Length: 199
Image 1: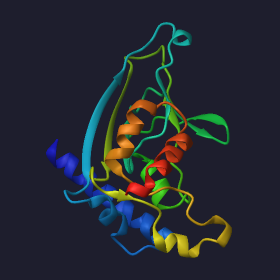
Image 2: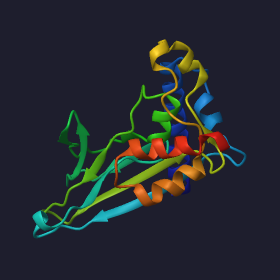
Image 3: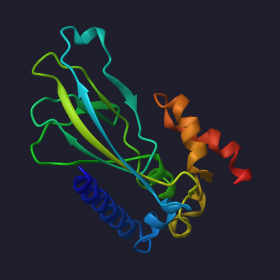
C-alpha cells in the first residue's frame, strides 16, 4: 500500500506540473504553493457503497466539490454510480477497468482564478451487484499553505476579470468546508473573502 500511495503521489505531482504548463506557470509552482511549512498532504480513502434495494429512498453520497487539490480515483470496474455535473445535467462516469478518474478540487480553482473548475460530483445508489468500491487519493495543500490566484495567471487576465478569488490559509478553508461541504462552493469563497485581510 505504501508503494501504491507513493506512486500515486508522484502521479499527482506530475499532473500538477501539467496544469502549471497549461496555465503558463513555472514548473513546480503548484507543488510549491501547496507546500506550506510542512509539505503537502496526501491521503487515500477506500469506500464501499453497498447495493440498495430501494435507491429512490436513499441519496447515496450527496453532490459536492472536493476542498483540496488533485483527486485520483480508482473506481469499481463493474458497478457504476459516480456522476458529475456538466452544464446543469448529471452525467454518469462509466466504470472502466485499469483507469484513474482525475478530479480537481477547490484549491486548483482558486489558484487558476477560475480557469480550472472544481467538479461537482455525487455517488448514486445502485440495486445491482455487490455494491460499488472506490479508492480515492487526495493530494492537498499543507494546513498552513496560503492559497490565492497565481500572479502570473492574473497578469494574463483582462482588466475586467482580475482577481476573482480570495487569499486564505488552507486550514481556515477546511474549517469552513467541514460545515458546508454539501452546499455550493461560491458562498465558501465569499466567506473566505471576509477573512482575507487577516492573511
